[in-house]
Length: 301
Ligand SMILES: [Zn+2]
Image (cartoon, rainbow, N blue to C red; front, side):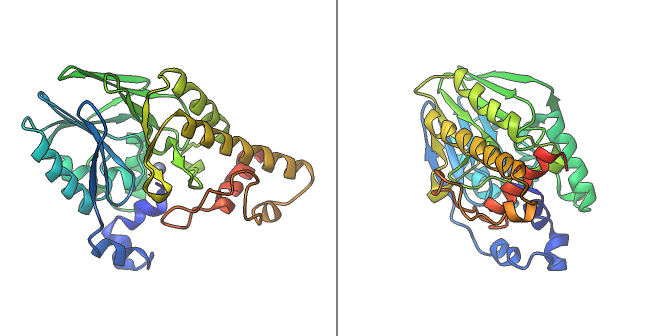
């Protein structure tokens, strides 16, 4: 989801005890679950961003890789489902809870692909955290659109510009009519907005308008994170999150115009009309951090 999660995934951070809440979680065996969607697609949930998958008679496609522990469980399950192994692992973006498991898939997948910015951020953040040895980087990157035909399915990864980071893609399984949104959707969770890595709330809103126009009313969307395990949904859920981001930006804009300070603005505990939004796990993402980032974006801080 974000940099702190990324750091927590590196053994250096755990040894340093910098993040006291994570080592316990890292040792505990998290619950993992495979769910089927349609036409050979499905989700895998464990710890971190939801993994999406497609199994065909020409091999499997995996979208995102969580952390090493749950990636192992996912890899085992995919191998059992796919007699032709894994063709490709796609990363929706660079955050550690979507890429730290890459090294587990590395020996099994023919290649790893991501947006060029995602690959660059993964490398930069890992080098900063001295966690380069724990990474498996994409072997292929692309600037706009990447496509693959496999087993009668067409897989399309599309870049829509700055949003949750500067390197997010949505991955569509076109025949199945299933689209993995990565962290472009936090379903009823306050979002992490990675301004350091080029996030833009204003453009994120337009991305959430554009994506459903390229699909239809029956499209099933997979979300990077969702409250109460709701990691899939439809275009109404995308619209709901778009409206949340719009309300976040509008509220902050009005408060700035009224002369309120960043500190005062981030003290509000609920966004009117969006009271069902909660802090995700880890809980260092909250309405306050989202409002703070909106403030920074609007003031150019
Ligand atoms: Zn993320």
